[in-house]
Length: 222
Figure 1 (tube, rainbow, N blue to C red):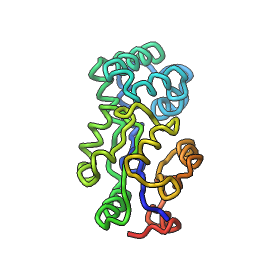
Figure 2 (cartoon, rainbow, N blue to C red):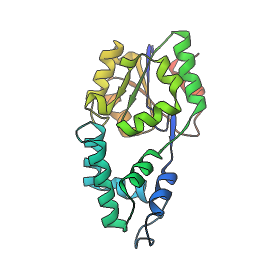
Figure 3 (cartoon, rainbow, N blue to C red):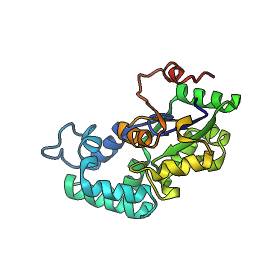
Figure 4 (cartoon, rainbow, N blue to C red):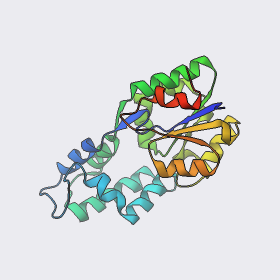
């Protein structure tokens, strides 16, 4: 029986606007880069995020091992070398902020109903960073006020992201519920696979999913 529900934030409670990010970056590139498929809207998520060094730096940023300033300067230099990007530090920081989009109302309504009924413990478990955490706080203040602060588990604060089990172990410890009685809602299968190996129940969320209907098979009704 599900006693606790863990929610991801990006693409579960708040949209991620890659098109906005790519548009801001493209506006600071004097020419369309050669060989960049899907320029500009698909370049960052489709190409740059597959670069091993970029992923290493992103992971270091998400786990608090490098600062926002270090990450933005790294990203700015990488974009300059690969795309001829001419944006300033502030331009790059603004593009970084722009990924955080709009609240996903249906998911937030369900979460708030769970909190209100008291039937389930609710927590957030998110790969995050200081800038995106600040933007999320502006988009979903009611959610963050409704959930105990210790149940808001952000990778840059705890030093682990969802590439391994540690962040989920921290979540289980904080909510004090056995893995088999916990459901994790995320939009990335490889992260859910880690949960499943730990005995945590999982739900893969997509933008066209009816979350209320999907969770009924876990016996969750609000």
